[in-house]
Image (cartoon, rainbow, N blue to C red; front, side, top):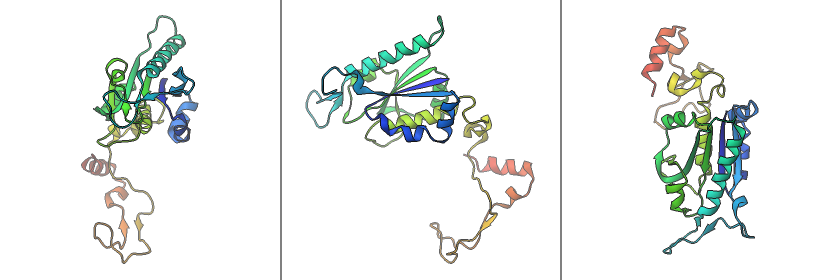
Length: 232
């Protein structure tokens, strides 16, 4: 089982997605475990302050290093107590950042080999740089765009990594890196929209939208060839 420990100030945004479909079933089967950790638990002041103004001036607020450090240390200590004596926990601490390495399938597969992934979800103007340099093992970005926080990247990583955990998908062949990513179709074999006289976004007249004949042929060799040809 792999454990995802998500450090965030908005744990409530995760529940609906994590309880649904594949991830929901995987947790019930104890194939994965997701812990949502509210960063404010690791503050010491009455206002549970997790951020402050940046040194040198500038807009926005920056997440502080102290509560993040305490949260990470607490999670590491807790995981060590769970495993049998003598066994080391394979832990990876990840900070989501626009400056991080681009997340891809290869990274997801690599991360699935760990026992524990501690995911730090930033917010506001950013996270104190000392977190990236001295607490996180690596920084990850899910794309060339800016989000308001690391909650969505955390969900993306959890799902992509979980797909590599044995039993989560049911069949290993469901992984696209194994079967390939190719166009798929289902019934009906021919579909004619009610507005059949109108054109598609590509400018083609939509008379009858048909499934490629080879997929209806029953010739598995030709079907495999077609899928390989159209696979990305």
